[in-house]
Image (cartoon, rainbow, N blue to C red):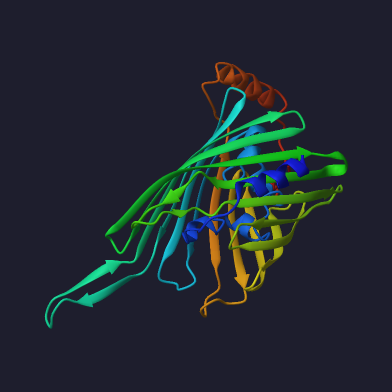
Length: 328
């Protein structure tokens, strides 16, 4: 399988790449804090918004929102996502947007105007299925980009994700992004950067704590990043911490730290990156909420009633205690 993956890379070749910043940054704080390793994020494993292969394994629906400023602290990124089950498939609908800074220009001594340098929007639909020890997912996305409020370009692209559940709590991931896409602002067409991704993770659990570790890479013609990350939490305690290290070839090393706080099915995550770039640290905030809902599932209402009935029968008074984090 690995040989076929490498052979596919060689056959595709590389082309001039479009420099859309949306395509290079992960939007979620819980993933960003682990150096962008989706296998290490516990929330992404049950959300499947970034790694579509996880959609086949979700048991609850999820809505999430993420926000961050760019390195110049004048533009911003936003991400909105909804994941749910349809029959045996998991489905995700999401929006990823970027708005750069605007500048004012004088047309004459008295009249001035402002121009937004860049506006980028990506609308995505993902599907995932669980094939026992193999998770498979794919994503269709539509990208619209506008430069200086005048030059516009649109394109479609595809992503593919594949996860293998291995022995001893190991997971192995292969992914590819932006197949088939290209932007043509002027006469010359710029291909989207085709990213090839690999991750390997291992989970450690005990009666009191859990630990997820991982490493991987993400490469294209003009970009190479190598990552390692870890996520740690104590069972029955609503706080999880994570950290990561990434080396971007021909640029620099980055360290990230983050934390997630859970209140039942509600999660608030924050992550920050070091060192500063253009005198600014990249920071991300994410809110996620998980809830019971299965679209087009005829047995959902019946199963929900039976579940609530059993819960009421087994319900006994218990003292108040801290909300617990859900461990997957």
